[in-house]
Image (cartoon, rainbow, N blue to C red; front, side, top):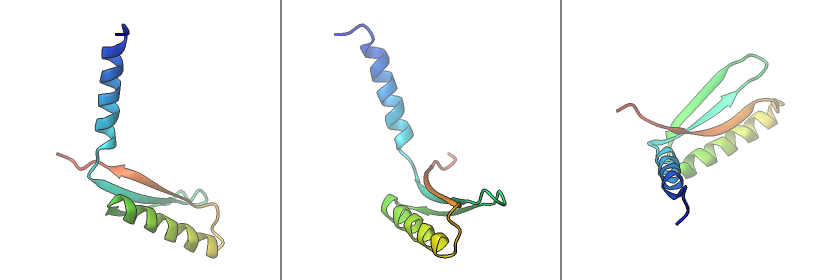
Length: 77
């Protein structure tokens, strides 16, 4: 067994825990105004579909510089 195996196992466990979330939020960021809009929470598929719809709407409106992304939501406990 490699010498760093326990450390690697701890990193894998920590990464797994970060991947667990309470849902997803879709963020739209306008670099011109600095405005940020959040939509959600959604499950993973719904968030992806919402992000795709927003991207299409912004593109159709000529707002191609607006960034759209999906981020994990971690509810306060």
